[in-house]
Length: 171
Image 1 (tube, rainbow, N blue to C red):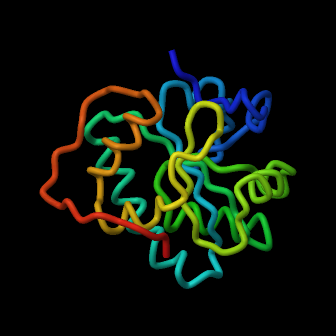
Image 2 (cartoon, rainbow, N blue to C red):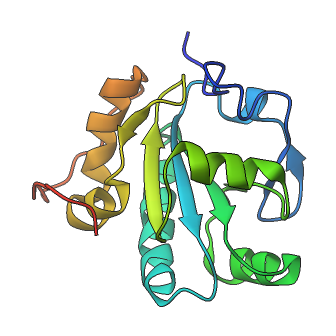
């Protein structure tokens, strides 16, 4: 049974995440048996402002189909108010690292994040499935979940779409 608590690097283990509503959740409970996308973004970033609605629609479609997918938002916002406002106005009901948490720096360092937005798909050990999540979501759409879930080892149905564009590089 696969769990996405990042045991291999202990990044989320024993930590707290929060929902858009502000409810605190525990990664060991909410990321178990799911494909996890780490979303590095900020409210002040124009490319992030363009991509967030696309990711929200992607997230909503997968959840409407009962597929095991979760986003963890890692904010580069300057204040907690900016993070909260950004999540409430633009984001799906996904998870976020609380503002000012040291895990933000750890994740940026671990995944070599220097530019945003960036969507990194990871497996249950925190290893990268793809650094090109943004491109895949934008160009392929929900069908890319099928490939990710196969790599991660989560098998709970598939998404059927007619969009089959390929990808080679991230934005």
